[in-house]
Image 1 (tube, rainbow, N blue to C red):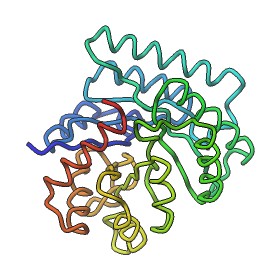
Image 2 (image 1 turned 30 degrees about the vertical axis):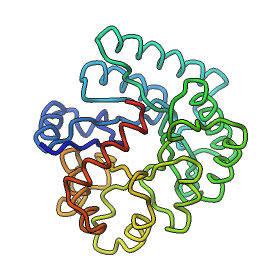
Image 3 (image 1 turned 45 degrees about the vertical axis):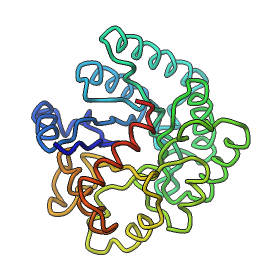
Image 4 (image 1 turned 180 degrees about the vertical axis):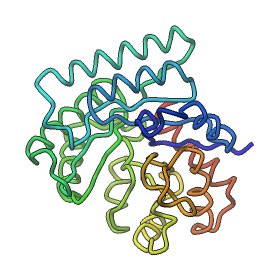
Length: 273
C-alpha cells in the first residue's frame, strides 16, 4: 500500500473528541501511516505528548505558537525541555526511538497579532535556541511576516543554530511567493503544503509548489482546518492527505505513488525518524 506522512495536524483538538480512534483508523485505511501533532502552547504540548505515547503512529512537535507567545515566561523553554526529554525517555521504554521529533509550531503571525510582535520575536528566538540545544528541527508558522521571519532565520543560521547535517525544519502551510522559496530552502528548510493547494483559485500556492525542489516537499492536512476539495467546508482529518498528494502529482506531472514515496522520505529525513 502507498504510505503517506501527514506532517502537521491537530488531532488533539476538541473537534476529534468523539471519534478520535475512528479518525486514526480512517487515516490508516488511506495509507497515512504517520502523523505529526503540532502544539499551540504548554498545555497543548502536554496533551500531545500523552497522545503520542498512546498511539505509535503519532509523533509530536512541542512548542508555543506565536498567538500564545504572551503566555510564556522565563522558564517556559526549560519546562518544554523537561517535557520533551521525559516523553522521549518513556517512548524509548516502549521500544520507540523517540516520540517528540520537532519544536513547533513556532514563528511569527502578523495577521492577527494576538501577541505583541516583540514578544513573538523573543519567544521565537528562545524556541529556536531550544531546538538547537536538543538537536531537533523546527516547525515554522509564518503568516504575513515573511520579511521578519527571514530576518530571524538568517540571524539564527548566522549564529550556527541550524544543523548542516539535516534539514533545519519546515515552513508549515506555505502561503508565501515562489520567489521566497529558494531563500528558505537555502537555509535548510522544507516547504509544507496543505488543502489550499486544491482550491479553485490556488494560483499562488501552485506557483510556489512549482518552485520547490522535490527533495524539499512535505504534505500536511493541518486538520481540523484547511480541508481540501471536495470536502472543503467540513472538518479536515488526516485521511484526506492523499487528496493533497493527488493534486501535487497532477501539478508536477508525477505519479501519485511517486509523490507519496518522495514526500514520506522527505518527512522521515526532516524529523530524523
